[in-house]
Length: 129
Image 1: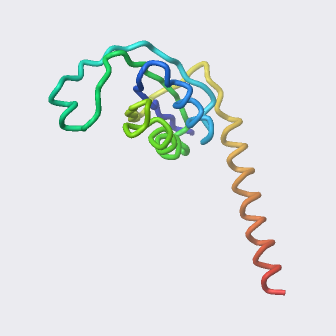
Image 2: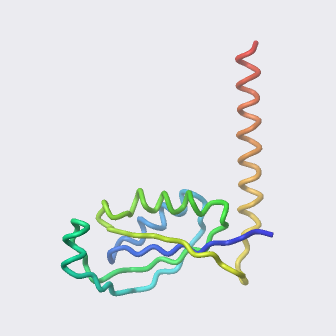
C-alpha cells in the first residue's frame, strides 16, 4: 500500500506559483493555497539575515512518499529562503487519504524506471560492441 506525505510550504504572498512549478517538476499534481500571516520579529531578521514579511501563503501538497524528498528539494531550490519567495517547507506523514487517486503516479514512475534501465542496458551493450 502506498504511503503519502503532506508537504507544507510557506512563502511570501505572490510566490505560490514558484512552489507549484517546482513541485510539479518532480511529479506533484496540485496543491491548496491558504493565506497566512507570519509572526516574525526583528531578532529573527538579524539571525537569518533576511527581511521577514508578515503576509504569507501556505501551500499544501499531498504526494506519494516516493517523491517527497525530490519535491521538497525542488521547492527549496526554486522558492527557498535565498529566493524572493523566502520560503520554507517541511513534510508530515499522512495516515489516510480519501478522494485522491495516485495510482497513475506509481504506474508512470514504474514505466519511467523501466525505460531508464532499458536505456542503460542498450548503452552498455553498444559500448561493448
